[in-house]
Length: 314
Image (cartoon, rainbow, N blue to C red; front, side, top):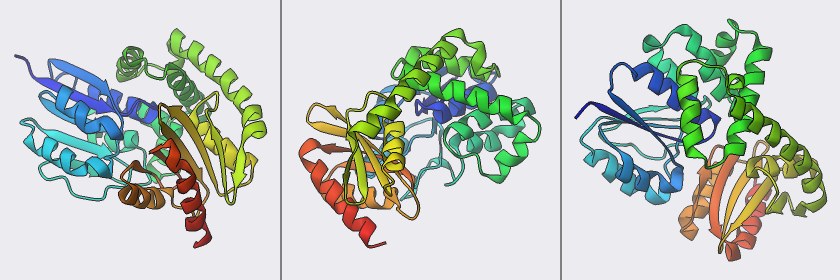
């Protein structure tokens, strides 16, 4: 059997760009490169089901609820395991090669680690991921942009971000995008991606008015439920349009709310959600000002109340 590399990545632009950079760097060293998309709640399950040969995990936070299981699964794997991420990491991972830095995109971290294996022109792939994840303020990004026309790079990042958002769980198409980027192709050169980006732009424009009409404000928190568009954008719009420190967008999935939260400094959403998740036995966490959670619907009011209390103590 040939040498295999498994890449487990988040399905957003930063994760897709990270996966593309890993694939490009190791294309000649492995006979087979497998791409799978996952998220914090399912990371351990997907690792156990999909991991073969050497494994790169990129841009996927480890949910504290499953931390012990993750450490056990990673350490038991017979191949090499490399974990590259920029979300807060609360514990060590024995036997795993960890590349971790908050404040920089995962795609930037991958590029910096593998730069010796990649032509310099691949810096634009890392830039697409960094821009899409609001991580375009680092020293590396500023320096890397110097060799490009930043207007073109930002345009391509927008096409990629919007198109992938519209593709949602079409993992086969996302694998196609990874392959295209691994050959350093421009996102706008993929007709389907360009079409999806245009569709998503129209959805986003309609979402602005919907959030303005439907957002509810409770204390210092503005929220919407079941928005007709991306949860992250809806949370950002709720926060901004209602001039609240925190915006939440929740989507019903059975008896659970899947949520995106956005905040303005100094509200640390990751600190709040990780504490809330530990105490309530749910899943939650992310970055300081952009995070996610999954809670039973009947716990939503409690979350909003406790979040207001958290904000009032700052």
